[in-house]
Image (cartoon, rainbow, N blue to C red):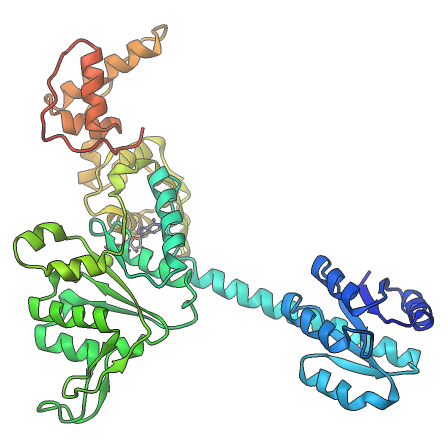
Length: 461
Ligand SMILES: Nc1ncnc2c1ncn2[C@@H]1O[C@H](COP(=O)(O)OP(=O)(O)O)[C@@H](O)[C@H]1O
Ligand SMILES: [Mg+2]
C-alpha cells in the first residue's frame, strides 16, 4: 500500500483530505507543520509527499527542497489556495511533480497521486538501471580475500577520497592498472575522464606533445593545434604507467607540472591550469634508479605522496582459487564454453605455482585452458608444463595416528628434501615465509643459521 505524507497546518483540511486518501487505499501519515514534515521525510521513505504551500514558518517550498535534498525519489505535490498559484508554479520549477488548488477535487487528487506514484516508479527504475550499468562497468574489480588484498582495498579507498598523487608499485601483472582504475572510480572525479599513458611506449619527442599537446606550427608537421593527455584529463585522473621509463628530460617536465599545476603546450609559453589527479605506476625499483642517477629524486618524492604496493600473487596464494574461479566464469561466458571447475590436483598445483607473471599470467592461463579444453573439469594433465612441474615433486605417504606436529615436521623435511635443500623454494611450496621455515628448522633441532640476506617474512600462512 503506497505510503503518503500529508502536511497541512489546518486541522480540518488534514481530516478531510487525509480521510479521502485513506479511502482511496493509501496509507497516510499526517504532519501539522513544515518542521514536522521535514523531520518525517528524514526518517521515512514516503512514496509521495503532499504539502500545503503556506504554513507558519516553514512552508511547502522548504518541505519541497528538503525532500529534493534527502529523498530525491519521493515526488512532492503542492497544495495551494487560489491566491498563490504563481508560487505553486515556482514550486513546479523547483521539482514538485504537480500542484492542486483548494478546495481539492477528490477525483483530481486521486489522479495526481497516481501520476506521482508512477513517476516514482520510473525514477526508481532509472536509478536501478544506472546502478546496474555502473556495476557492469565496475566488473573489473580488485578481487581477493587475502589479508594483504583487503588492506590494499582499504588503502585505495582512503587514498581515493583525496586528490593526493599516488604511486603504485608492484611486479608486472600484479594489478597496478586495476588499482588506478579503482582509485579513479572511487574518487569524486569518477564522472570525469580517466586517461592512461604508457610512458614506456612513447619516444622522447612524441611523449611531450602527447602529454602536453602542441600549438599549430610548433614544429614541422604540426598543422593543427593538438590538446595533450593532461588537458584531456581535466576534471579527472591521469594514469602514468611505467613512470620509471621516463627520460630525465621528460621527468623534469613532469616535475614542473606537479609543482605548478599548469602545463604548457609545445610551442607555447602560456601556462594552462590543470585540475588533474595524478596516479603513476612502476615495477622498477625507483630508489635504486634514483641512486643510479636515472630518476630525479625530487620527482620521486613528489610522486610518492601516497605509495600503494600490490604484492606478488605468490605471496597471497589464498587468492588464487577465488581469482581462478572468477576468471573461469568470465572466459566461459566470453568464449561460450562450459568448463565447470578444476580437479583438486589441478587446483593444488595452481596454488603451489609461483606465477612470475602474477594475475595477468593466471588470467591468460585460464583463458587458454577454457578455449582449448573439451572437458568440463580441468585436470593436472591439462595444465601447461611449467605448472605441472610444481606437482611433480612426488607424494608423501603419511600414516594416520600421528600428531599434527609430527606430520608437519615430516612434511616440511620431505619437501625440503625434494627440492635438494633449497630453503627458499621449500618455503614457497609450503606457503610460508623464509623466516618461518628457518624458525621451524631450528625448532626441529636443525640449528640452521639464518642468512642475513633473507627477506621479510610476508608470505601468508
Ligand atoms: N586483484 C585482482 N582481481 C581481479 N583481476 C585482477 C587483479 N589484479 C590484476 N587483475 C587482472 O590481471 C591483469 C593484469 O593486471 P594489471 O592491473 O594490468 O597489472 P599491472 O598494471 O600491475 O601490470 C588485468 O587483466 C587485471 O584486470
Ligand atoms: Mg600495467
